[in-house]
Image 1 (cartoon, rainbow over the protein chains, first blue to last red):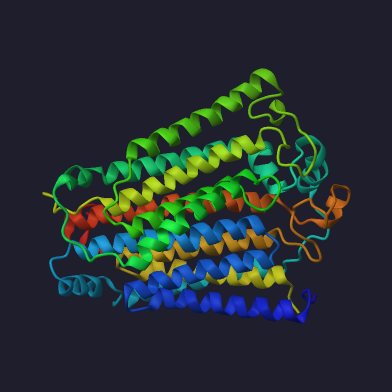
Image 2: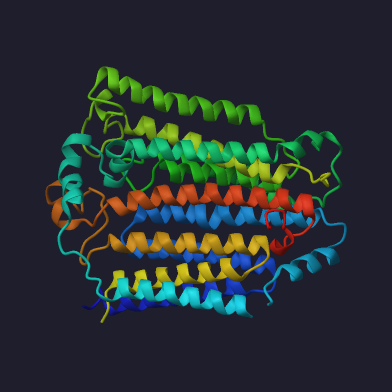
Length: 102
Length: 237
Length: 121
């Protein structure tokens, strides 16, 4: 079963690979803002994938909500958590302590 | 180390399950029965050109009512959980860095355009891709731009609450009216079906979707305002 | 060769697995919430990919797809309606999780989930 045309197949393959790469960055990044931006990128690429899958309503919703509002929610919360620490060194310590290392 | 190994094993087991679902998957060649019914009957029964809109507002309108309720509850809980900080917000704010002029001038030009786009998207929800949820999210993005340009801006929570409650009440009111004057709860034939493709067609769908768009936009804005507005305090345990 | 729907479904499944693994192994609350959001997006991709059919187009009746041949030309509209609802509710749930993370941090001054031991034996 071939896809629509080699162009669409190649574009979809590229989108899927970028999707998974961005997701891995979102999980493994050391700095928190990089992880949040990578998850916004995942939502954006998912919205393009929805368009390729012939779902324009869903693409519009995912672009507006997933890569717009969700990323901003995360950044607002991150800014408030950082502002409430008396100095940034203690935040980095709390963040490093919270990262995975078993 | 053990914990990570167990997590990896669990992930691989779930991955094997997904792979078994994926290997034999063959997409359908014909629409199944439900989709065929919707595809055949939408144009004459509902009169909406966007079939997904017809499903969300009319055929499965009760699910949309449930979704709007869930969104309302989550916005209310976010406001409630963060409300304690808001009381102390009357204290003078710490001096923040001044916002750049590009942002404050640009937001004055862009915000009316963004709001206009949001209103266009939900008013035309039955003709083109779009609808209440997309339009509401776009309106919330316009409010977000206002919030970014002026971090000390105080949103009137009264106005947002009134708008949200009024839209919700009108939505349910239209549903009950459908029960009294037309076929059933949330029935479409309250207003005339009209010509396929016109702006004033598809019964009450434009009205309902506009109400949903306003309600969802108000809810998202209130969530954003709650999360960015309260000041931090150390709690006593 | 695999079809478009299968490729997208595989990418969605891998995204679910990445989010799942991240939620299990991270200890920082905010990173856990990011992982949940990724898994959520993966589920949406899989659902929309289920409704895709070869050679057909989006379920919108206009000049290109007149109402008479809708049955032969459009893809399944029901998964799209489901996913629209799911995306909006996913945002509500994420906002709720973030509000709770804020309150937890205000109480204990840490985002490390191993420090919250009140519910342990």
